[in-house]
Length: 263
Ligand SMILES: Nc1ncnc2c1ncn2[C@@H]1O[C@H](COP(=O)(O)OP(=O)(O)OP(=O)(O)O)[C@@H](O)[C@H]1O
Image 1 (cartoon, helix red, strand yellow):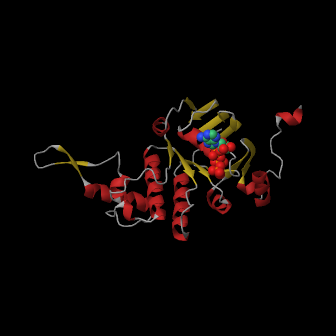
Image 2: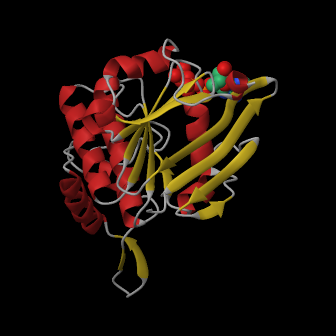
Image 3: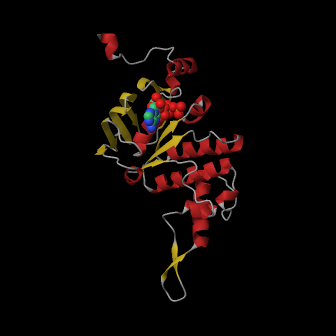
């Protein structure tokens, strides 16, 4: 069997007395898109934060490409190739799109005296245009400051930046939290296409959403949480929408036999 790009085993998480997650097993393969579903408060964001290194679990293990990792902070996850898309936080408002897409990987050129150290904006613009082209993403002109973009356009730029980083890191993992929440029709289609393209290149994608049509568009499999417990883990082509809704609301019993039911 192929080694999972990301595997979580027996994850427990409590916030003080609040038990947010109990014994969660989760994996995503390279090139696979997994939708993480559940009602409000089910534990989706908590699980995503554990994957991204923003939270440390109270128990359980995390493996990236078969290697156990301790994620103390998001930079540990990023180094391991796991990239969370932060919708708004990550962009520098006063800078243009190209500069934002190139933060941390600026192209330098030599100045007149031969010193390396001038940022080559033109080369960065050209590279970013080619990268966005490859991802099938169209944004405003590269020289537009991101503070002049709409919320939806900003979201697409933030997502594209994470996608470029993950693609650069080889077979990475991309974590998305409601990536189309603020988007109109055209931008939603672009993001769907981007997700599919990343997956086709071998990136593993975890998608937290309340949007079932989005899952049907892009996901191969869904994992459903109910009050901090995994109640279903199914391929979308092997289940029906009614079942998914039933697992989300709790109307449908868990796929997994729980300990309480045995005793
Ligand atoms: N920082 C925190 N401190 C205390 N409890 C928290 C904290 N974050 C989340 N919780 C609790 O953990 C549980 C899971 O919350 P979480 O945000 O992971 O759910 P979710 O599935 O992402 O919900 P939503 O769809 O509403 O975003 C909830 O009971 C929530 O109240």
